[in-house]
Image (cartoon, rainbow, N blue to C red; front, top):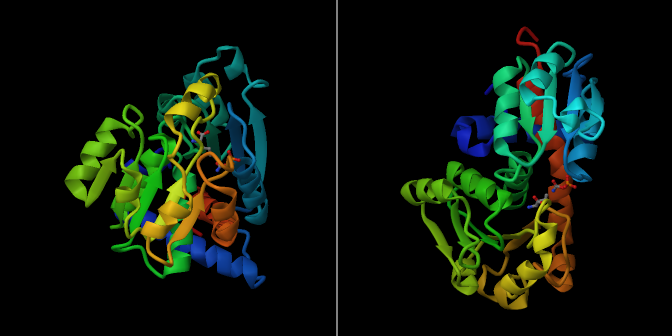
Length: 304
Ligand code: CP
Ligand code: NVA
């Protein structure tokens, strides 16, 4: 693994290696055994969209690993004034040891990796959010013991989260079902790939998607960059919500996950959210451990 651009690219073994190292790093931190695996390394963090969890967990994670993180707002970089990503990549590669980027187009992340000579991590694009799903898989494994054969049901927009969850679930041998309104399905290529490789269902029927699920997952109806569609989406997605009716058809011990930020009474009721806050905030914490694992695997010197 040279970069983390999208989960669909990763080998199944890469995912297992990341999850195992993430568990180890979490254990080391809880037991005051943390080591400075990335002493002296520098991570650039380019953000073209807002962030709480991704920004803070990467910055704190790099600090904990003995390295340094530089927050690079796209508004302040020349990239915001039109400098091509190809040039930015070649320049930053001469100063830094790794880059995490949050942006709109997946192609921008791919170009950064193609033209630069250092590892690039996708911190969310319109297409995928791989760091989030690695933390999600870590959390499911933590609560359920293993992933193999579990059913994950995602209710809501066929967005970056849906695409990454499908890729992550299929690669870890989970069954996955998606409930979304017509016209808001996940990426076509991902649906085709999942249909060929797994027990995969994509339907408009929420209750049939959620039946016997071990994990229920949702995300906002309007993602970053879709603010102008908020009102239309409120009407389209009405009912695509994790609530007591949905919980009643899932397994009695089903977990609920949400990548956050959450919009209560839209994609999830306040009641279900608070009843499952233990899992949801462990999931948020696991962003830190999973991303530290990704950084160590991508940025640690080979001879160490
Ligand atoms: N889940 C997630 O990526 O959160 P932020 O947008 O706050 O980084
Ligand atoms: N789908 C959401 C995820 C936020 C973490 C967005 O892209 O805004």
